[in-house]
Length: 471
Image 1 (cartoon, rainbow, N blue to C red):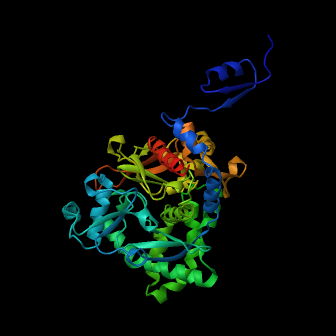
Image 2: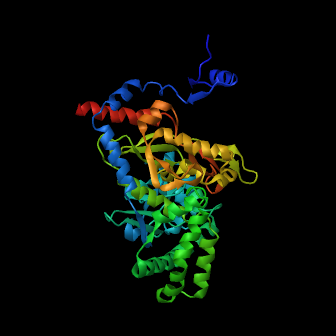
């Protein structure tokens, strides 16, 4: 019997390890059986004549978008929010099913808008439901981090694709810890929100408009390209992005302040706040990713995911080939590191629209660009590299604009494919913050999480049903 020159191994590593121990080269194929119950739907979608071209078009549409920062304005002005209308992160939900952090943020939002004198009075308002309404941010071309609550008076970043004029929106970032988006609603939280509305928002508007008039709008997509080269992954690490934004806006903040009615002290406070808030750029990265992914919506036959979002109770995805339909399952608890004395029992299940970054190929998909992130969310540097490589197995292609230096400048894996998730069983990796499960607590940690597995077979079934109807 002759010794083989090489061996290809699939499945478990037991055989591969035994062969490698005998000095025989082994090629390991990370094969997994498809998710249970998906075989028929996988076969149907695989033979759909629209699928290949539809996915190519969806990926090209996403990659063709350049997001620019064109304005900062109140939600009432740019989103048409009326008094009593609240936006939130994730798929649709009602007050009776809302998680603690979402309730806390809604309570604080009601007090901010003057609908109640005290946040503790707000539950009765939402339980009655006659003077208020809840709607996902995604339904208004917006995204919101964590609880994602947006009220009419909150100021929003306005991003635009110059080629099409399409726009997306996101609120201003409050910082970390005890903040509204993590469900806190104390006096300090509301005071900060009022300052964002009275000072920072108008100052940013003046600066953004000044920059736009002098040299054109700030290219957010280009900043994302640079920050991935500088150690950010644009979800839980945004330090380089925030500093580059501050570099671009600082001169205009100074020169435009007087014309907007603000003095040197206001400018100094704004610069300190943005410069001291490493996550400030996240609220630009998110709408930039949504702007790109929205370009891929409503492409019949495409199996590409265009949104992943969580409301603290449900995790939902939307797919290019199934319109605005949400496929939902239970939000999962993140596995990570906790602040202070907090532990797993204090954390709420995953929440926020910020997984739009992973949907676009950054965040958890680009962990190899930001090995330092493991100190914040847990894991090791080899884990970060392996995660980016693994995400290639469930995506349609890569984004050449957003590259990974340590992986020979390969583009980040982009375009999550429902069929590839169901065929491999590999779930998208998400970097996330953790909110306290009790309303009012705020942030308790950060970590890693994946979607509930069952939502992908459900989405696949929806795609297969459409393919059968066409066929």
